[in-house]
Image (cartoon, rainbow, N blue to C red; front, side):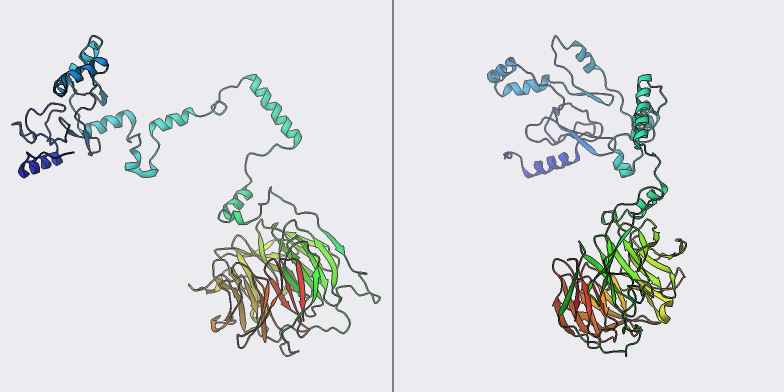
Length: 590
């Protein structure tokens, strides 16, 4: 595009200003200028500055006040055919000016744009429409009133989002279409007898096959879906039906005989083994083990938790990811009994105070109370949630507490199977429960919400909040034998220590580092004399620290193909430690 050298600076500025203002109100749409651009017609209407190749530009305003510009020849049909092409070749550039005079502007009939036809023999009706005078323009308020009377108070088109956003109510047209979309069977129209007969036949067939389902969803299933909506992708399938049932339990004894020659049960401690009070730190001195002396194999999948028989430690209980629990003899170093009662991985197991019973919590959402000696199931419990941790109440073996995936801690009565208390202040699934003070009058719980809460027994309101912006989630908490400290497995690859008592303050100088546990709930073991701390890590290694100096003493390559998630210190032997991992092997270190 080349500039006009004949236009001086004053004329250019004047025309540019006129182009920006546009035609003032009162101009005639579609009329030719009749003079130079920028001249005044004497009635207060100023012509518009034109772009090269344009005849006239008209600026109008739409319903929302935005300017809408029409090209000068918008809506005009140019001549077509070979005759028009021949005329242009003969007449050259002068023919263009004559065609502009013969073209007729677009006429506005109501709100519709109509294109006037050319003066020819076939367009008599179009000429009559073009000669009609356009209706008087209505004001914006008049148009809104008319629109409210015809279609309702809203603008029923894409401009609803401009005024109302995404919450625009449905228009009258949308409501009409929705009303017409109701199927015939719902609108009450009688169906053809053939269709009714076919429907009854299909219903009877499904009833005989047992496939007929109730259309009304179960209220419990609705509530389960609501509670687990944020983490349903991490949990096993929900229980179906009002009264779901667990799988049939079974047990197998692998020992030579269940009673010895003196009539004692196989779970009785061997002769010469005395029980040790777990709070007696002066009974014997402990040392760091030096090597692996035995491997217990038998689980078809990984082992997630191991627990020793209370006080004596002559039996070892393991929770497998294959859904079974096994009891091993640490003296004879062999498998004694297998308990099968879950169709999913077992998350946690726990002996009662005398070891005659134990609890198993599985990802199939069931808890089972087993008789250790006979392998019978004494009780099956579920609240339709995944149990993450289970603990017996130290003062009564008929009560036990469970940390669940719905952020609650519930207390069960083993005799009746009913929930007697709920502790509901965590904001994420509960990972650990530890009883502290006066042999278990209070309990400390941790959760994925990075908080530690202290509770009085049987009171549903916490008495202490432990929360700090620098804290990480602590999936495992273990009590020191002195009952003065809590050792916590923090997911920032540290063992942190809190004072156990009235204050529950963080001991900032006691940090045990060097292992990697991010993402895994690796268990913590403490020696009976309180001198050493051990823990597994995500690489399958086993670490030992000095509790007083917080110095790492030893680390071993304990397990392959997964983390070392469990470790426990023998309560009687001086330097015996058991570890388990997701490779399905339980190792004995001495």
